[in-house]
Length: 260
Image: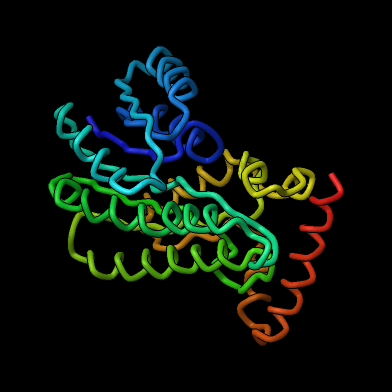
């Protein structure tokens, strides 16, 4: 039985990954900070699909959390075939106004924990017949975004890390995909302090996760979940213009959120 480990599984894209992989009859290891939500989801999916679910409540932004996950897997005699690095959050606003502790937590979760957990699990992923790593980045990875400066930079890291790792693992049985959603109606906006109405025009979590799993099945390395013409426009437009336009949009989103 294939076992999938999903971080940030209590809501949003993580919860949707759990639902769609459970429908594939995969056993699941679900981790996030909210134990109550994880246990409720685990019980629901076990009943609905006849799978085994395992729950570990932990905060991946804390030092030692990836090792805690590995110890949990070892202690429960679990070997992971799919790793879904979904946990992450964003902080918006001018850098000088951001809470320094939250910025450190964001970098730790979005970057450090993702790399450390991947590194720790690679030995057992190599032993799987069909291993997958899906790292959730963002369309923010393709442009500098004033007001989202550090968040966008963490997603650039995830994108480049994923592409490089995919090339490193060519010839192995591990497929690496970087999933880059655009604005998606999840709970991301709550942590970021963004007006939810600004996220209601994008693809749904179900659509994003479906695209990610299908892309991984097909051996893709990067999946961008936004209109093709938007992606091409960003890639072809001079970066100075992209920065300025992104800055205008960023300021608008921050101002709208402050009016809530």
